[in-house]
Image 1 (cartoon, one colour):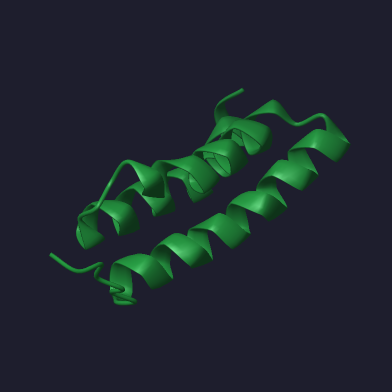
Image 2 (image 1 turned 45 degrees about the vertical axis):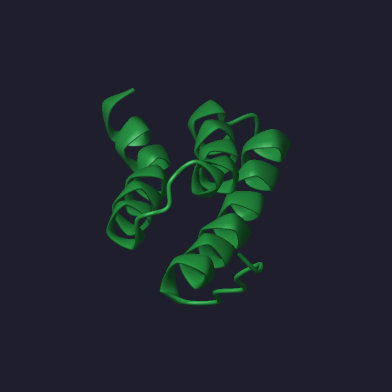
Length: 74
């Protein structure tokens, strides 16, 4: 079976969440904000393990909300 280069919605969401992950990681590292650092790592790494588009979207939004939720409750 030939290599499939599918640049569909799942790939595009992975790229967008990866870019946000780099920003969260850089902010968390510079400011010493642990939840942002963890969220950044999660946003950059989870698309490698999840292939369903809906799951990528939901997990990505959850990781993006993590620093805000942590700030409210910690």
